[in-house]
Length: 183
Image 1 (tube, rainbow, N blue to C red):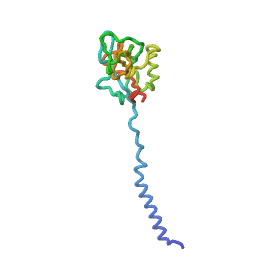
Image 2: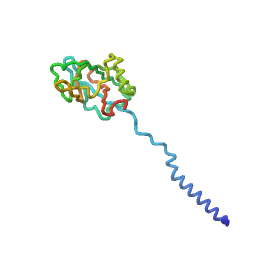
Image 3: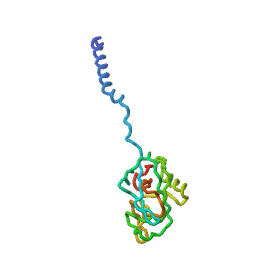
Image 4: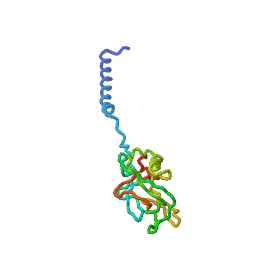
């Protein structure tokens, strides 16, 4: 049986109206630009000079340091804190503890480095080796040691021989948190 012409016209116009309504509902979704991902700019943890002694320096976290997420965008250019562990004995006048251990070595700072060029710990270690020699690597949050035989690892700061400039922030690694420029 054939549908009357009028019914076919109504059905066609109804289908067209439904399609038009559906496209109007979907149009804002299709026309809207894709949502950008949240900012993916990595941040790295930085330390500074906390104290100085006779040929020694205490480097570590201050109120600006974020050891859990990083405190400085990887778009910043800062020196890299480097360390050479050579088994140096604790100098007199320093009593290492969990929060201010002894590094058993010497620190130095590189010239300023763009954080996003630090794409891995290996790259950072290589920069330290490039400037100071093969025994040097990037300093790490847990490099401070304490205990009667320096058998324990602490955190937040450490003492070392060497010189690094006051009033400067340094890229410093942390192995157990995503707070490095490469994370």
